[in-house]
Amino acid sequence: MPEAILSIAGVSKRYASGHHALRNISLEIRRGEIFALLGPNGAGKTTLIGIVCGIVNASEGRITVGGHDIVRDYRAARAMIGLVPQELTTDAFETVWKVTSFSRGLFGLPANPAHIEKVLRSLSLWDKKDARIRTLSGGMKRRLLIAKALAHEPQVLFLDEPTAGVDVELRREMWELVRGLRATGVTVILTTHYIDEAEEMADRIGVISKGEIILVEDKEELMRKLGKKQLTLQLAQPLAQLPGALAEFPLQLAAGGSALTYTYDARGEHSGITELLQGLERAGIAFKDLQTQQSSLEDIFISLVREQ
Ligand SMILES: Nc1ncnc2c1ncn2[C@@H]1O[C@H](COP(=O)(O)OP(=O)(O)OP(=O)(O)O)[C@@H](O)[C@H]1O
Ligand SMILES: [Mg+2]
Image 1 (cartoon, rainbow, N blue to C red):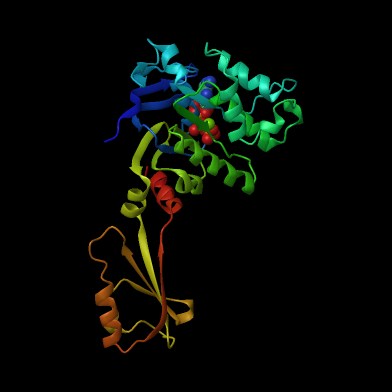
Image 2: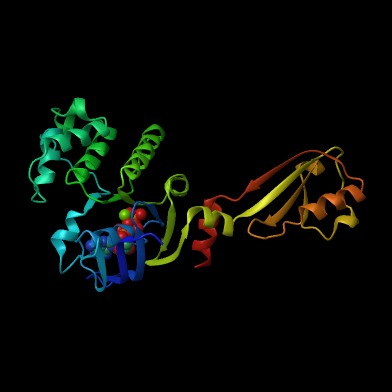
């Protein structure tokens, strides 16, 4: 297994209100991956990020970033992390250049105009470097938050709901951008409650619900393991009912009798399709077309959260 760059062990959080926001979270993030933390509102995503970034104190547990304990060795750990927060905060009257450079200084790093320029160019903000923040569009402000988070050359970037309330085009742009960051070697952890976002972006997915991690899995593996597949056969002649000879198969008539659907487990070694096709031939049922469909991550997610 590739080396873990972030290690979370047995972390719990009880807020002063008594609310138990996280329960015994353990999670290892691999260097260079895009990890999506997927969970409904209030699941504890922002709390977990806040703890890793030192904004919220954990009630229990231990976290290291690049081997640095986030409590004992806070500065070294924090310097490795960039955070793009969920809430947009803006210093409306400052310029793009100033805000980004200042952010680097907060980490005690010497000025590096070449790095700031590279970051701003990569986020298509270079021609806005002298613009005041209040004059930027919403999409530019979001990109500026990323620029700020990258100013001190972090190895791990947290994006807390990067595309909440963002239009379709800007979402695509953000996805591209995040993939570009991974290509430069940055490890990305993003939270989202958009399933399609996790499906689109992530190498691995963790599902969090009511303060507990209920699943961590490679995305492909998750889709394969939990996915059901459905085969639809368009019949040459409609059927009024299923012939008794086909009763042994998990079949359903669809589209007013002009199609048959067959559901099978995508993880199984044996789909049973060969037997089905032979059975159809014996029963004298011809078909003119067929499609297969795999359940989406959305179906998987909904059934997981419901089971819990
Ligand atoms: N400062 C706080 N004091 C008390 N309770 C809090 C505090 N911050 C968060 N909580 C509670 O902890 C739980 C988890 O909140 P958190 O913000 O971590 O969820 P989230 O998964 O990020 O949700 P969202 O998708 O809405 O951003 C919620 O029930 C929330 O009300
Ligand atoms: Mg949140």
